[in-house]
Length: 389
Image (cartoon, rainbow, N blue to C red; front, top):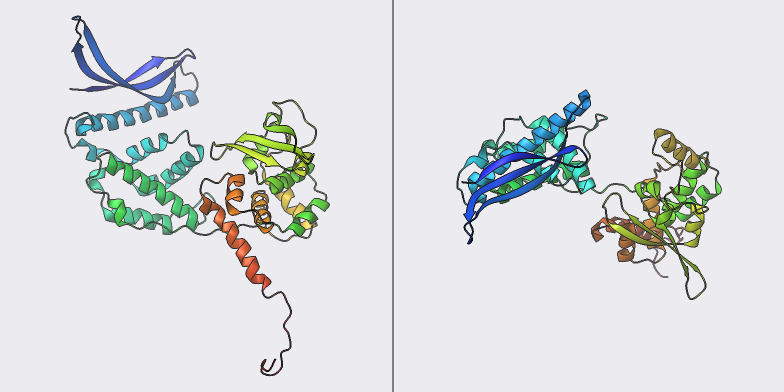
């Protein structure tokens, strides 16, 4: 019978790496020697060998508890039949324990992990810790959906937005799909409950005239002004503008018309994807004088309530009453590209969207403006009946 154990391995750094050992017995080789058959799963969980502070001890305890939870799941998988040993212990695994494991599997995908983590807090508020897969039915799933819709609130005590409910329930759904695929559920109950529809959020953007007004208006924080205008001309997110280093800014000679070629090569913080983005000469001028490769381009730029307030004041001084955030610069770039003839596929690639449907909302904005344009011409006086023209 396969034996499953939690083990520790000391690393050169002094930390202890936690891993699971699957001992499958022995095999006699042709030469008569005995070979022990083992498989290993490294959990990417680590302990400090000699914790001193209370924080280090607490961290060790949390890491060990998570490892033991994963160990319990692995033992259940062995008994259930993953290694051809039949048992029904999987149904006795706690939902919250299983969700935690699925969340940790997504640790490398930062944005997705954060969403799983945020959804988990609401699941823990709704689901008692003793609930196992054997206890779950359709009413339990409907109850969680109702909880998200009517009870759950944000940190600022506001009801969850439609898109947030959609995102959190989708993580819950992914957990149940995985539980069914791995044999923890005899029936995929999640398919019997319809999730939340994706809502269309308002994407505030600036027109070209408004962007020009901002450009002509002084800002109390010049670094903020340069960074915002750069984002509006390139579509790059705040997180990528903020961390941008000079090593990412490339100057690649001239094109056939003698126009300088500039490109930004960077790894998107949100998606982890590497982007190769051509930028205009004007956008390059906003970056300023080149410094050492490891230096940040926009030194002094940081996310804070003060900086957000200065952005709003800058807009007000420019005569713009819209609620503009730094992300509005990215929306502005998308709208201006489409208005000036760029196709939606090119815009999608420049913005680093993984799916074209994410970009389609900007096409709807353009379509709405086209409809509004139909009523810009003043009404004609056509006579009493408007006939006999």
